[in-house]
Amino acid sequence: MINTKVSLRYLCMMFESTSDRLTGAARISKGRRTRRCFYVTIGAMMAKAQQRAELLEGRPVADAIKKEVAAEVSRLREQHGVVTRLAAVLVGDDAASAVYVRNKVRACAEVGIESDKIDLSASTTTEELLAVVRRLNADDNVDGILVQLPLPKQIDDSVIIEAIDPAKDVDAFHPTNVGYLAMGRPRFVPCTPAGIIELLDRNQIEIAGANACVVGRSQIVGRPIASLLLQRHATVTICHSKTRDLPAVTREADILIAAIGRPAFIRGNFIKPGATVIDVGVNQVTRVEGAREFFGFDADKRIEAIEKRGYTLVGDVHPAEADLIAGRRTPVPGGVGLLTVAMLMKNSLQAAKWRRGL
Ligand code: GUN
Image 1 (cartoon, rainbow, N blue to C red):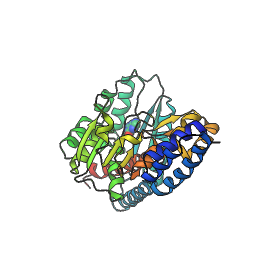
Image 2: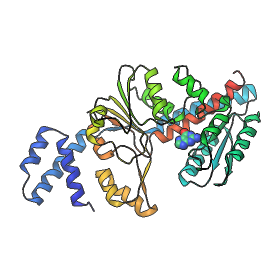
Image 3: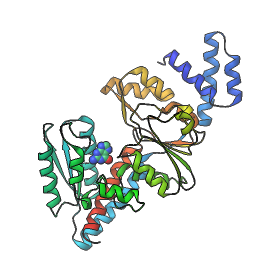
Image 4: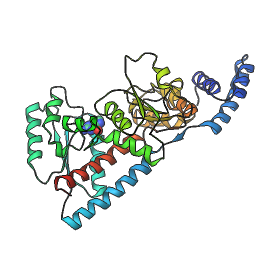
């Protein structure tokens, strides 16, 4: 069942952002509630058919990358006797991190990379984790080391990141790799930003000359994706919590990257008509009303998910509003997350080759 109050707001918003004819109809229909609802619904259905953003699905791009990696992993094994190996370290019992690491280990199996999953308790100290990292650094059979973030609060994550051998740093979080990227001479590139570039390239979305706006300045996504876009000759703006009149800034962007960690924060009025919107956020929605507001016509299956497992996922972009304004947008789930895993496979393969001078 559609919640009338929420759907009315959503449908009126669709009107405002679509054609004049539809906006006119919305004005004429102001008056008795039932009549307004009737006119808006028909108009909104037309708007939906005419004007929905194209979905930039992560799956086909991630599958293509993994296929290429699998072929090269197998060539390395056959021609050079090299077995590519990734060590994935999970500390504590954060449920989301456990899912991410499981997906990474599963992807290794898909592409023929050997993996070691190392589970450590939530009470692990910095020293204990350091000892694990040093052992992996010294193990010549290990090509890549991944320590899943965030770490429990008693662990100093910068000490751990700086202890990882830069040659095995497949996350590209070590200052050496961060520095190379900042200089425009990347070695390893962080997986999510690298995946975003692949997604844009493989969908023929032009980066050079585009106005690109990154909302968020994290070490994992915001800063490195800004560097990569700059390196590809975009005009890059980085926004953050102190940016004045954020919607006015983001509305200039041909490519808008949302990486803030706030559910459905980027609304329709933040988006330039026709823009490409890349949604890096992964947030849980547990309230049915939230799902109705965020997903509009697609709310039913999201509400089902909430009823079945307690939550559904939304990104940092308001999907129903973005659909009316953007030219293309990445879905959540099924967008950028899949590319992060695929690029980790690519980086692990790269580590195996570089370490052997191949
Ligand atoms: N936590 C969120 N994203 C990442 C990632 O790309 N790598 C690691 N190690 N931890 C993360």
